[in-house]
Image (cartoon, rainbow, N blue to C red; front, side):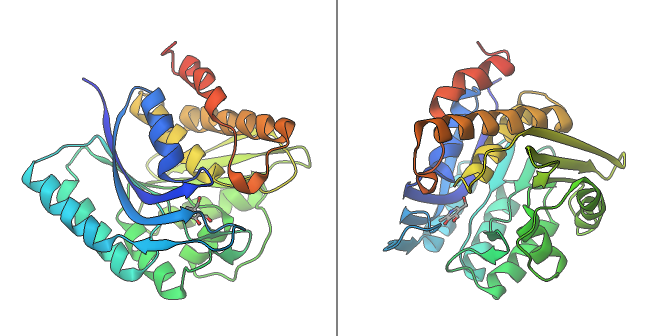
Amino acid sequence: MQKTAAAVHDLSGFGKCSLTVILPVLSAAGIACSAVPTAVLSSHTGGLSGVYHQDFTQGVRAFTRQWSDLSLRFDALYTGYMSSPGQIAACEELVSSLRRRDTLFLADPALGDHGRLYQGISKETADAMLSFCRGADLILPNRTEAALLLGEELRDEMPERAEAALLLPRLAQLGPRRVVLTGVSFSQESIGAACYDAETGKIDFAAAPRVQGHFHGTGDLFGAALLAGLLCGRALPEAMQMSVHFVSRSIFRTWRAGTDPRFGVDFEEELPGLMRELRLL
Ligand code: PXL
């Protein structure tokens, strides 16, 4: 049976993040992905000005009503960017009405990066996101989001291995059994992620070569590839490793092409490589 997922993220028209990267990655992995836009934006908010932002909270509530009337079933619910406490409450209702015993609920607390909240994200939204993430099976924070979830001061520093190993069990104590921390620094030349499973107490790391610069939308690209790996039957450490390499290859391609990093990464031509890793090609 084909695996199914519902992605609950914003639709940013330009800049390759959230739904515009999650849908193609999951489709390439053979997963049928439905979409719930939490908001519609003309572009992401990371360094692009004049963004048009339309809240879609009423839409989320209407989607929830129709989808529960249709008794739709999903193997995974993957949530991300939400821009107000009311929107988070609507997504909470959506998750509780669609989630079944065997649904994987993956929550990306998309709140900020590099020690700062994203433009338009308030402290109240961050607090509501913490309570939302407590109910997830798996969370996917970067260092900034980990600090927000743990109520710590924000700093623009990447965690190293030892710090990541301390953060992961603390994040799992908030509620989710599994945690993947992104943006872990291994050396001047390498960067990647770390994961933890509270059931086994095991921590794993995955590293890839580092390219200098802030490339936009890579958290969403990573999350989509991770979910693809998990739904294709990979264990969490293997899915993480595969995703770190997929994102790294996409960043290299972007850097080689000289693409403006605010425009998102050139992941499209790396999709066949991901499909080969998933043994779909
Ligand atoms: O990729 C994270 C993200 C998602 N959605 C919107 C954003 C950002 C990061 O800036 O602005 C709208």
